[in-house]
Length: 461
Image (tube, rainbow, N blue to C red; front, side):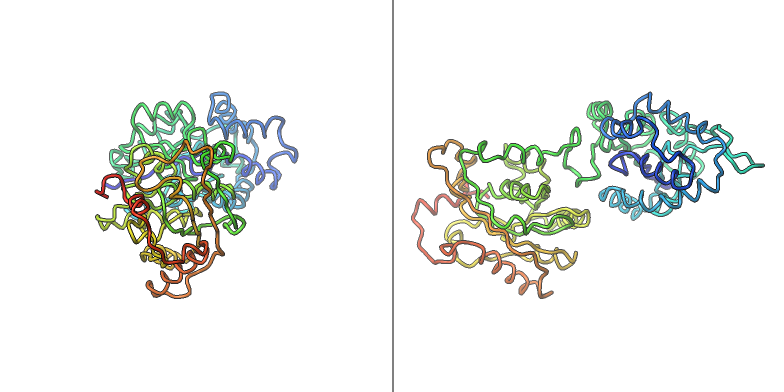
């Protein structure tokens, strides 16, 4: 027996509805009036936010009657035209999920209410092995739709029955298979597989999946990043992280225009405080983009800040395990067009190393950049230890009379000039060091109190 992964289309593979793209292609081939149907745009907008409703499905079911008289050949021409636009709209992490299932030998199956003739070229283009979709009956004499449905209306129980029948005919073990959908009406299908996953779930599916303990995913963000009502925590924090709402710290970001407006990139900064990851999220927020970051398990497992960093997209790194999973996850984020923040030093330096003028880094950052042909953006951070020293479990939130200033200097993006990891790492650390104030490059002897602040409260780390 083999396995399969079943994917819904609208609000699952795609962030929103396929309807506007399909309508445009049908209009281009004279199958729909030139002017949009009254209320059409509002209907699609409502669907994008709230998902399927019974009224919208009733309208969809009337599609076969509305298509009566269409020539099948014209529909196929329209379908060929819309295949590439639909493929371009597939969410980046949906593509990765499909590839991972295919690499394990699973069959990829598109399961959608959308008419088969319209989505078959798209499904073939992006690599589906089979399509379960509503079929409109064609008059064999005229080659035109006759206004009826041929077989199942592939929705709710109809979609579930289609999945079961296809699995039986293709010797697929549903108990070991996966299914992805956004809609509460797809609970029958999701319940048929051993691994149901709610993607961008509508409100009812969100509640149902949470109660059942089903995984929740959003294909426009890395796995593990929550986006209830379509908004992820970083976006909320960006709204809250206004200067007037952070009276205990002053943040000076310089060079924000150097952050890439789109595409994957590595943001590499020096590390001085537990505040640094949150500061990086604040900094990228200046460009309106979220950031994912590699964070050692000591940070992600810390009370209070740990759950926050994980919900912000932190990729947990256990330095002692030797696991390649963090690097694979980071590479997936880069391939998905995400910004990934890294701290090449690996950890906050402690003791005398904290005051060392020469920065020393590990190879991981430049290895990621070289292997994924990704730009690095060097970033210099200064002063965060005055807000949250390593010796404290929480930042100084009551320092309102004279809040310290932290600076973030963003350098020019670049590609490593050498494939030699030692040379490339030295190049990166030199670029970061050049962004720090002159005092950072001066050798000095710290006081005993300054040294004490560089150690965690329990020296067990």
